[in-house]
Image 1 (cartoon, one colour):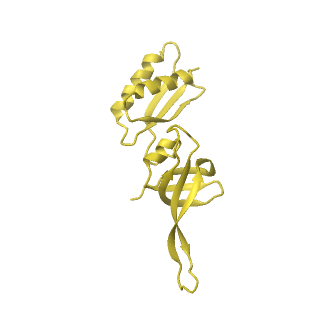
Image 2 (cartoon, rainbow, N blue to C red):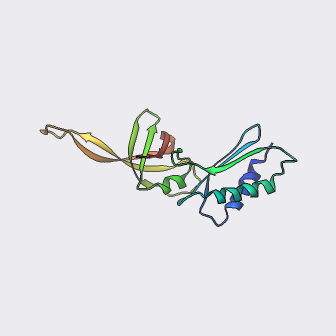
Image 3 (spheres, rainbow, N blue to C red):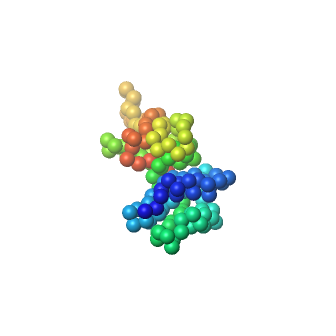
Amino acid sequence: MIDKELLKKTVAEALGDTDLFVVDITVSPANDIVVELDSPTSVDIDECAAITRRIEEVFDRDVEDYSLEVGSAGITADFKVRAQYTKNLGKDVELLTRDGRKLRGVLTEVAEGDPADTQVAFTVEVPVKVKEPGAKRPVTRQEALALTSDECKYVRYDLKF
């Protein structure tokens, strides 16, 4: 079985002076390794190849066979760590709360903390229709909702065409 702690350490060392950060590292019982990366700017294929080479230097396939995939978390992937929330501040997001509400709004605030934290407090401004007393039609207002990642099934960038 692949030593996940050694794998995490190896990936962290390989990231070194880059602006990349780890979103997730998974190792299946069949030794299928998946390393998901992200960056405030972009994830370059050459950077992924360099990290792949570094992992292959540390983990010898002759000793223990494994498959390895190193890549970007993707633009439509669910946010998993605080750094992804921070990266998307001021951008449109889509989220599904645990109580079944599907919301779209602008990510306006992310609580301070370690970039690798998976429990994140954040604020989203969502449009809400409100009927004013005496008005014929409802008006749309922006309402700030303070949420945590634990209260959501997913939060992701809202890609619009």
